[in-house]
Length: 137
Image 1 (cartoon, rainbow, N blue to C red):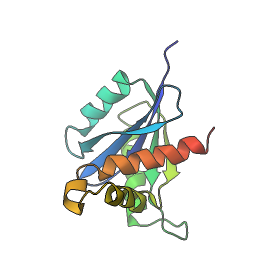
Image 2 (spheres, helix red, strand yellow):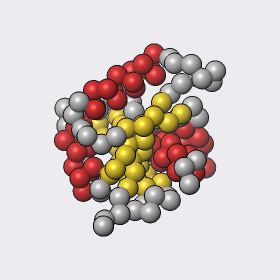
Image 3 (cartoon, rainbow, N blue to C red):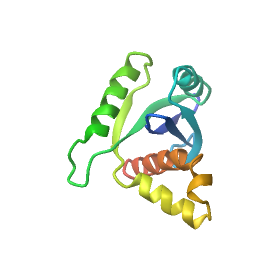
């Protein structure tokens, strides 16, 4: 039986960060950033198939008080739309601090805001997936 992976996803209206777990589902690693355009679904399906993804962990951007925002509603709609196109289960995960934590990591790695823009989304996705994995072991 093949070992499967989980996928972390950080949704953005322009870019979507993707992270993958290792086959033992212990470690989360940044994987790629996909453009949120007409090619997104075909690229996503390819990753799901090639990497044997069994579940997607989608970051849910709720506010500090734990309430929905406009962005939360956008992500909920994105999930609903995705589920009409793929059969992989999708689970929401609180991503309240993932973007700010990703920015801190990039600063420590000496990235400028300009140079870090290309990787911040996949780092945020890996933080979402890391948190999920740590809470499900």
